[in-house]
Image 1 (cartoon, rainbow, N blue to C red):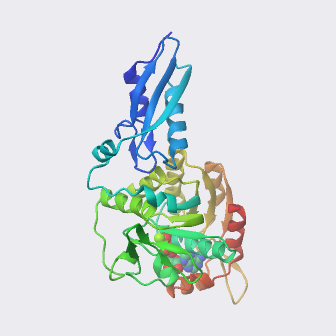
Image 2 (cartoon, rainbow, N blue to C red; image 1 turned 180 degrees about the vertical axis):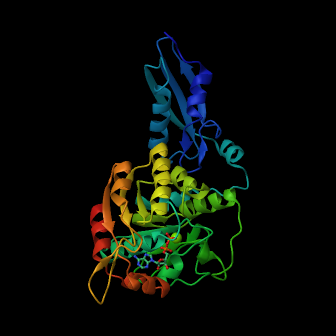
Image 3 (cartoon, helix red, strand yellow; image 1 turned 30 degrees about the horizontal axis):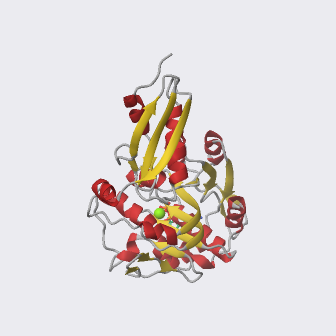
Length: 347
Ligand SMILES: Nc1ncnc2c1ncn2[C@@H]1O[C@H](COP(=O)(O)OP(=O)(O)O)[C@@H](O)[C@H]1O
Ligand SMILES: [Mg+2]
């Protein structure tokens, strides 16, 4: 019988990420005291960066599963411990601000990311409309605008640039008319049209800070508006935020459908649950004749949903009212039956 070596175990654990820090457990020097018996029982200790780490169960379960998958391993015992202050500083770097206290203030019940293949399909509009509808039902809602280079959430809610204030404990998000908490690069910039010209790591770092350094308080749902496609930023959100599920937004065009398939494939590879497909700009009802027109061609939503193993949750018409309300910063005034359907399915 083959028994794994210590380096096999380390190797397996180097594929397990600390979801919050976005780095693997080995790189973070969290693994200690590996013991392997001749009968295939493996035990080790995980030194958490903070003892009460809210993600301890997940980290421990992921580590256990990774080692259990090695050939010859019969059972795995994970002991949880904590790093000393010196160890933590050495690993995380002295300049890295790390505020465990903050995570105690924040309690986010579910994180839903909204993703699309290509831009301009209405992903941000759907995110904003969903947030508004949830808030209308009395839910505590936050929106994290992860589109760092093309942020559009603040404008849709009529939030002015420069609205974010800092406190000793973190950033205070912008708050909309209906009490939705919003964080976005555009709330940090003095002017809305200033360009953010950053490379991937800066973008990823900002998204992580938006997650763990915003004073979200208690939220029922945090919606994350992703940038289009399968870029670095999307990867950061999916890897370092505890995303419960992803809503896919697409339009009927063949091109939009093709690219959204890439998003499906990314999510499947990353094992992030896909909740459903929303087809936006699905059709247009002519106000003069009442006739339905397929402006962007025939729908591919069912095929995409089938490939993703989910259902089409809604088909939204092209509705000039949506454009107008989004442009005017009054997205919270919209009242669309299709959005209500999605909210019902979100539960
Ligand atoms: N169903 C719709 N009907 C009319 N206009 C829409 C609809 N969905 C989105 N829009 C408009 O299309 C534009 C692009 O939408 P946006 O949500 O910013 O796309 P994305 O985030 O996918 O890039 C916005 O100006 C928005 O107001
Ligand atoms: Mg957008």
